[in-house]
Amino acid sequence: MKHVGLFFGSFNPIHVGHLIIANTMLELTDMKEVWFVVSPQNPLKEQRALLADHHRLQMVRIAIDDNYAFSACDVEFSLPKPSYTAVTLAALAEKHPDKRFSLIMGGDNLQNFRRWRNYEYILENYHLYVFPRPNASYDDLAEHPHVHFIQVPMMDISSSYIRQMIADGHPPRYLLTDAVFNYLTEMHFYESRNAQ
Image 1 (cartoon, rainbow, N blue to C red):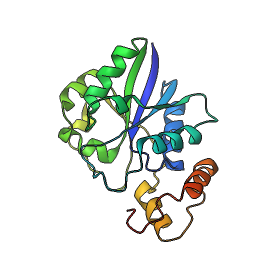
Image 2 (cartoon, one colour; image 1 turned 90 degrees about the vertical axis):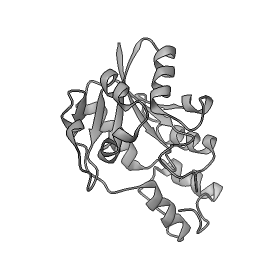
Image 3 (cartoon, rainbow, N blue to C red; image 1 turned 180 degrees about the horizontal axis):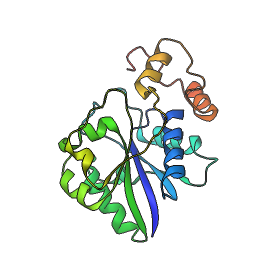
Image 4 (tube, rainbow, N blue to C red; image 1 turned 90 degrees about the horizontal axis):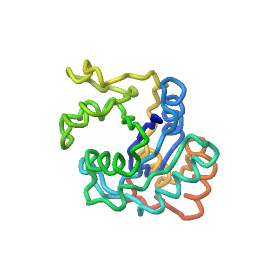
């Protein structure tokens, strides 16, 4: 079965940090592909300043266009809102029985993992590949045999920081791929000071 890493996120917008994380996972694990799962609504995050689903999906597509091992996944667009990872995993397993799925997540997500719906089921049936995040702390979940820490370069880049830069009139060159930067600029996304 082909091992596929699922990288969930709002990708609002996708930035070079996301791409570096995904590529490092391919290099340092036995994953053959990484799917960027664009989430319409994360139950643990505010909906404010979230671009329309199709725009965030399009930004992911153009950001990863040159890497055959990366895919944009919109499975959550047709699932009930808000998006719960356990439901998404069940839908993907049914649709792709030939794939072995694992989750890619930041240390901050592992820190909050007990807040996820059905987190025990996820942990027992899937592997979590965790990359470091600044100031993240862990409990005994970090010792679980299905939790793997991968030494990805630690970058304190966030989509919210990029949105604020744009709102303040500072183009975030080099934090985005050229294609995503051009798309955002042409569409005038995040230019309002309300776009936190």
